[in-house]
Length: 180
Ligand code: APR
Image (cartoon, rainbow, N blue to C red; front, side):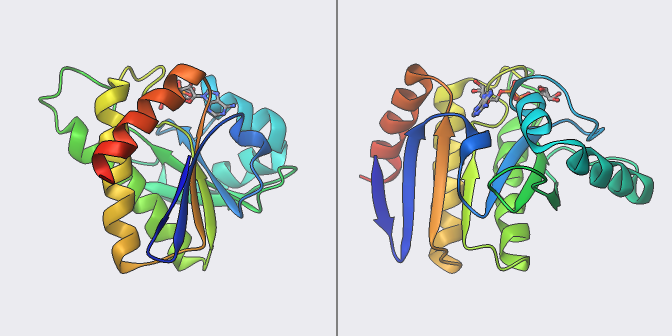
């Protein structure tokens, strides 16, 4: 599914984000930036040790990446030139500012991309795996946060790379609500 939002192409696709050919891909990391499972593990495996090396240098400077914040490293062996690592919130019922923190993770990733003049970026479905954020609500937050950012700061392409057909369908349903 794709749609032109102003000048930016917004695309929903099913696939493996480590294969994405956008200039940057976003990693759903944890605050330690030392890797993990899920998409974090896949990106480090596919991108190689250069990514972790730069994550360690970042941790040496700033200790950790707080939830909702984002940092940037090389893409290593990936097709993408950069990996933007962001930390989504762990869902704990919705009364610990999870929604705002998830929106912040998308917004801060996009702000960092703009700072680096990155024109195309791919997102996974942040926080909806190990961090158990309900995917229907997460999809609405993700798409509306991206919509609001692109109104001010157009890019060439923003892509959501969903790992399963079910996730893609949830995002397509949310897409129709956010972009009636
Ligand atoms: N490409 C695209 N999406 C993927 C891939 C992949 N290769 N692998 C997994 N996903 C999807 C999952 O199916 C899920 O929809 O990414 C989404 C996010 O799931 P997680 O990777 O579990 O991320 P999250 O829920 O944000 O939890 C982050 O998990 O891996 C650890 O170190 C990470 O502690 C952090 C936590």
